[in-house]
Length: 417
Image (cartoon, rainbow, N blue to C red; front, side, top):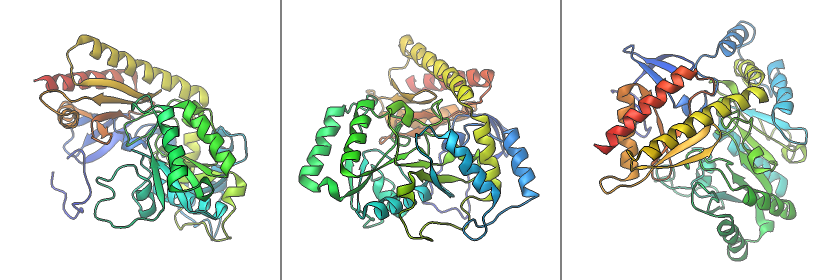
């Protein structure tokens, strides 16, 4: 596909150009239909062109398209913050700043944590991903392609192994690494924040061990370290719960939100405890487009639709079908490259292992092409690009889900040829 005027530094997974979409189906400029298991990389948990979102955004366009909130507040922004108070399952009132993107939320969280603690160091995790802007880059837990050729990055940042049964790192190993960090690299009273994803996105849909998360929460409490939980991809229902930190039994000091927050319109947020969020001088936070009125209208619909009961039902349905398909494929013995099922709930990854004739990464690259040729769009993840992440809408129709899984099985069959 020819992409004139597009920077060659932008990677494109699928060489097609979409024209329209409806829930879990999309059509390209040639009129060909695909089933979409990419979902805008986690943005479309309610699918393409959700009727309620379209209606609310269209109505808002006729009333007010934009007002820079830090100059002239508007009601939509305030309504979103009010709805977040009941949608986010924390025990304290949230103080919130809306942003345009997850990376912008990450950058502002770092500012807030530094301002609150008067410290600079941050601890992140191997294989984590927190954005492509300069400070966010240094948090990411791998070099290629994000940190290559850009020189020194804002810091200091220190990385720990990510403890997950999905990744083969146990809790004791990660705690030993943390203890070593405090003994050899820097004392805990110089750490401003720890940032983590409850379920890593780019890292391969790996769920953090609950026992490690509980221990880490205690350590942060003891040493006055801000715990930042990044739910930009795992939040807003992706796992079948509003936010994945509930699987870990902990609460964040600062919470990063984004992607599906406004159902396809640009919106993200950093939210947390008032004493932390209010640490910077007046005017220290803000942004021209942050909390755009049309995006706010969409976000209100998203939270109305994502009741806890609906999320649980959607999550259980998707998890059940994905788990059943994975078990069937593994039991058949037809796919020697098919490894573990990672993640939790409806946020699941399929690991493709090395075989004697191809690496897991090569298997996945072929799978993406083969699936696309059959009408299914898929997305890779993992440090070695060998984990298939499944990001179909939570609202996908049962018959479309079955068709998509059938196409995925057909594509897997091509890997044995």
